[in-house]
Image (cartoon, rainbow, N blue to C red):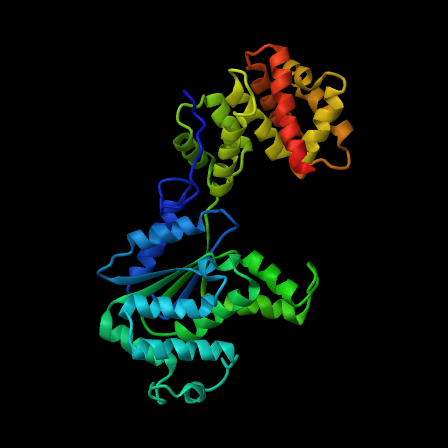
Length: 397
């Protein structure tokens, strides 16, 4: 029975694995506590695929509906339109349905952003639109009043904003402006999933700022984000045991030898883990031997660590002498021999982690032991690895 199966990438708010549970519980306790001062904006910081969406969905599930009204907004789904206005509409419609006052609030918010009048007195913005909102009320006051009327003075509004860092920089900046304009009200808490580094890079690109270059605009970009978000919470990096448990849940039945190799040398990012497993699953259809899954796993694990190009070069040079499988298969007790070949072929391109001799010795010993455990005849292994090599090379080209 196959133990490597395709895995859907849809985050479900699962907190059991990868150390997410503690972070989720802490945020829930803090939001529902009496000590939190509102308005409050919280950034969930992590790289692409690190589990930010999963954490937001977990928060949506675990926040007490008796204490919290939750509005979930996926910014990227509105990328083709105007996500900042869509955010205003989502909040108002989720809270109050439809109506003239709600539509007017959305129009005022849109006008404020379109006209870039965020620094203008709010009464001036309202006078531009003149469509029924009392000119003495600020937009934030309108929302605050509605929150008090509809969800109660002791209940909080929590707006969860997902995939903010996947939006175009102009849309991202507009949504961030909307946070300042629209959510700066009592009993309102915004929690946004955002990779600060990606947004910073987009900001630098917008103003043609080079990496490593100090400038006033670069400093302003960082200060802008820090001003909007009072708290920045990182997605936890999983420990070995947590990653082991997660992979076991995704690959039930896998031998401990192969599981530990994936834990040790596979990715830690949840989305990257799933991507790698799905790639291994697909590659089993490229090969024909009874060791198909193990061969696919082994090739993909080497590709993950060495990079596709370096693995292709490594295979090219060794296999031209008939030695790729032989070298890896025959040196389980002498990883130095493998590493010496690797160094000689890739002196200018060695990945940084392989500059650590202890890491390199442990890695190549693991790979050699995995290769040594394959039971197929050499000819069959040569055929299967050749197919995987060809597929990787075609993609690289």
